[in-house]
Image (cartoon, rainbow, N blue to C red):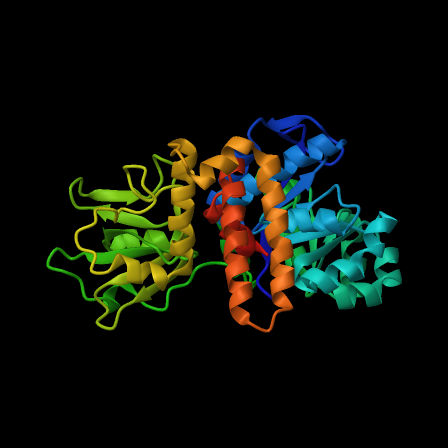
Length: 430
């Protein structure tokens, strides 16, 4: 069994966070800020339930879920308003790590195999409220579902005994002794719901209590102690910080022993300010936190490489990276030719510049002037040209046509305000 998880729930209704599936009293007007506060308090993931009643509300909630996924450092599990595979796809493409099928709805049971075959069993929870459905759908769950979410704690033991996969249970306020008793059950993978929501600031204390009782929980552990590093003359250790998604080098800072231990304990990058001679948590003022993905010592153990989830900009100037003052570039063209994403970004920058600063005689400006219908017409034509070129034995033809298609696609991206960063993030989420 993996470590036990603590997962709060956010219930989205009319763009606000409310108390629960049935209780529509408002908890927060800003669900994203609520999610960030949960993430900051060392939860292991967040369930987000879409309680929308109309298609428009559903689309608004999907946008909120996407923003939540981009703002927190823990997995987001999407639930609610699922009727078909397309609804699961929307949640996963919004950035959710997993989606929850509600097994009280027959259509959710029916799409299980199709959705699992497309996205994988590891992407699916099934939500159940009694042991009967678990027994009836045991084979389906075993083959196509990775976890169960139990809505009714009263049936926990019976469901856990019959479930072929680990179960997460929602819990009301109960005693610490009862929490430990539940988490010691072999097939219980964690707790969620009101108990976690109401005690979010006590998650670390709950995890410590679990460890004291021999229950494995999720936490950062360090393979090296502070004494294992070679410090500089000031007793500090330089830290190079890198975005784990883009590999971009974001900044350089220093740690003392207290900062190192705080980083390990909290999961947030914490540094020592040489000018102020005090600890500082990156993002504490701006909200642009850096969450630890991995820490590596170099060969001499005198520098740390930190790979992080960067929220917002890393630099105090508002720049994504602190390293933007170009000193020497030996051969930028060659560099671009060997970095596909940089090629796309360079071409896209020219296209965006044409949109903002029109140039007479520019074909790109001709497309922008004609509007989205013309751009779509050209995009369709180029897609057809790719199909035709693919039937040609000369491989160069298809390369030419794909380039034409990508150019027109980038014109459409600029027209609709979509960036390559959004596209690559979307692909990574898939």
